[in-house]
Each structure stands twice: as C-alpha cells, then as structure tokens.
Image 1 (cartoon, rainbow, N blue to C red):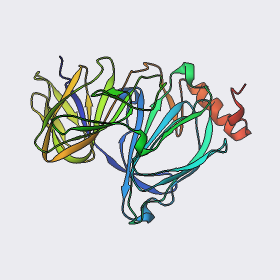
Image 2 (cartoon, rainbow, N blue to C red):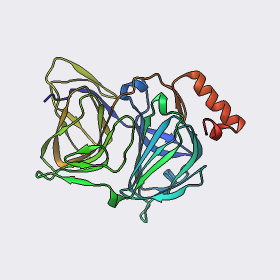
Image 3 (cartoon, rainbow, N blue to C red):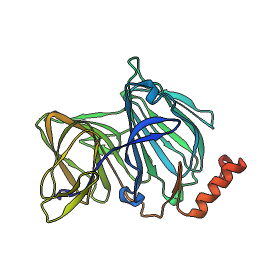
Length: 303
C-alpha cells in the first residue's frame, strides 16, 4: 500500500456569494486543474439568518454538476424545468446541469436560526457538457452509513467505502463523496482509488493527516511551507489536498475529527470558466452567454 503525500493545506477563506451570503470557500481560487475534476467547494454555516437568508436567486448553470449536502437547516430550490422542493439536515442533491438550467437555492435555517451545508462543483467531460439536465436527490435516511469496529463512521453519498455504496450513481468521474467521523485518539487508514485526485475537508474537531516521509515541502496557504516528513495538523475549515497513492491515514485529536473525503478521476481537459458556466473553450463560453442574452440558453442542444 502507498500512503498519499500531502500536496497542499488550505484554510477556507471568507467569501460573499449569491445575493449576499456569507460563507467560506476552500476550493475555487487559482488553477482549476489542481483539483480536477472538482472546481469549487463552499462551506455555508451560520447562526444569524441575515448572513444567509438572501440566498442564491435565479441563476444559470451549464457544463457542471452541483452537489449540495446539508447538515443543519433547510434549502428551498426551484428550477426552469418546474422542479421545486426542500432539502434538510442529512439530505443531498446532486444536480447535473448539463446543457443548461436556471435555478435558485434559498437557505432557510432551522428553528434556532442555524444553517450549515456545503456545495461542491464537479466538472463535466466535454462529451457530457451538453447532456440533458437531471437531479439525484436523496433524503438522510437513504444515505448508508458504514460503522467500523474502531467507531469510525462514514456516510456514503457517492462511491464505495468500508463495504457500503452511496445512492448517487452514473457520474462520469467515478467519484467518492463520504462524510467521515473518527473517534478521539483513533488512528484510521482509509483506502483511496489510486488514479483519482483526492482531498479531505475538515468540518469538526481536529487531527493529524500522516504524510509520506520524503524530502519535500508543501505550500500552506496563509502559513508558509511545511515539512512533508511530519504529520500535518489540521483544524476545522481546513482542506488537505493529497498527492498520488492508494490510502490516507488520519490521527484524530482529543475531540475526534469529522471531514468530507472526496475523490474523482481527473478529466484532463481544458477549462474555460466564468461565473456559473464552465466549458472547454472561450468560444463555447462566449456562446453560452450570448444564448443567455438572446433567450435561447435553455433550448441549446435540446432534441
């Protein structure tokens, strides 16, 4: 087995998005190929409704998939195809925007005003950028949880881990999306598909991700360079981007650690990205925005 070295440690940055939503962004800055096939990861959590109630009013998407996973509160959603609904604590919505959709997402919070959720953007390969839009939406009870002998728990949204398989299927990049909790003081080794790019985003507690012993240093945004021969201490709202290998090892701190583990096969295709639309070329991107202005965006590529 080959332990994945740590390539980079990133602290999520405060960001204002939508109509004035305060959130933290962990992916979405710099080179989009670094996390291929993933483009963006936003962490929305708050206890003041004024920080999130403005939401994300009607906006378009093309060429990507948006994955919304909720831990607290609710999000009301609607789209140009007439779909509408609500996802709440423990639920997931995996939306394949394909050739185009216009939708809105409006966080509502829970009875105490708390809102906590994540949105991940995954790129689509060129062959599927103009596919028909579709949803896969699952309630909390439909998401399987693996429980290991050492007390480690993993909720599987997509892909397989610890003998369980998530309900989301048919995704081109063959991703794994897991919500993992490791008990206090526990050291856990987790398998990761060798050819996939992978990252862990800490959402509670703290711990150390063990690193391969080799004479390299990795950049840590906001901190500097760190010796990769040492275990890397990670706190809440920190993201660890891994290099190649087939497993990772984490040592949970005194309060335990909870993190999203995400991996996927890289597409290795050019990225032309502006706002909520991601294509392969600037010409395709320009065409998409011209269609938006002309009112033909939703008709493009339709049979």
